[in-house]
Amino acid sequence: MVRFKTGVSLTGVCPQVVLGIMISADVYAKHNIDMWVTSVADGSHGKYSRHYQGMAWDMRVWNIPSDAIRHQIFDELKQALGESFMLLDEKDHFHASFKPNFVG
Image (cartoon, rainbow, N blue to C red):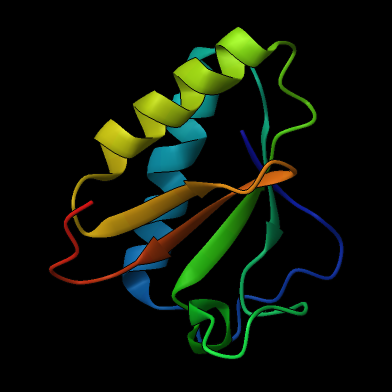
């Protein structure tokens, strides 16, 4: 199940991010873990962050029970989201952003 942290704004979010969030929630669900979106078009981010364009989202990781499962979920997210999304492990959260024609 996908859950949203209080205060998360979906204002101006692009449709690809909605799809990415749904795909990500499915990956978490395979491990019986709720996926918490902690930021989309809100919060403080880098000057050129895609969050401000509604093209990025952050996912909670501290509710993942072990490092092994965390690494497995990260790898599964990367595969499921495909080449149009960039995925980063920012240590305290996973960051995903839509980037057309991105290869990474």
